[in-house]
Length: 112
Length: 116
Image 1 (cartoon, one colour):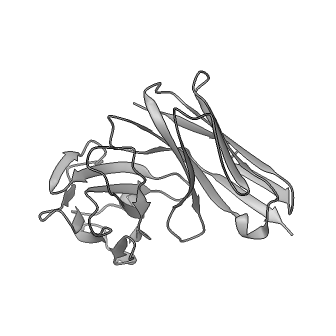
Image 2 (cartoon, chains in turn blue, yellow):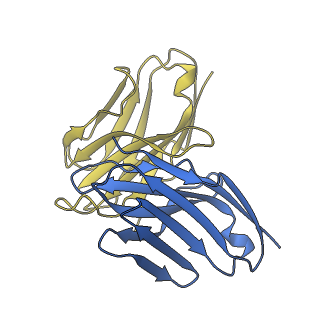
């Protein structure tokens, strides 16, 4: 089955700096890669996603890049703000599969 | 519109007790998923429904876990004879599409289960 690895497990940045979180996946058939933000005690919320026919996608301060050959994808947050502090999860899914396979999460802390 | 809702939000059970967790998906969403999230970890897949049909239950950890969605809307995850290792947050998610399994999954707030 699919295996998703996520790094780093914790990331601390100063307000205004950029943050980058990286994930690798094992199943070459995976072709949809969402990123979720989860605040303490809250539900995971989708912040951005990318499909395998696209190499990069941007939404304001958030961007995701995908390298299908290397089987890795990354989340980039620019101009970080304290409210960006949360746990971020990457995930992968196959076209023919039903389940999302999640990474283990990155605790992002943005210091004011 | 209303998002995915789950009840109860918190449940404390004595070891050996049976529990039932409810999920109300977004209206009209065909697909429904259950995940288990242990403390400090990512959600792990338990089971998947397409309307009332349970198409994948390969993630259920034991035969003590049972899920149903009899009318293709509300779903219930039941855990019999709870054990301490069952303590976790149980997340429900739903998605719209029947044909495209890549559709975004929207999560509920979860039920935090603590087994003493």
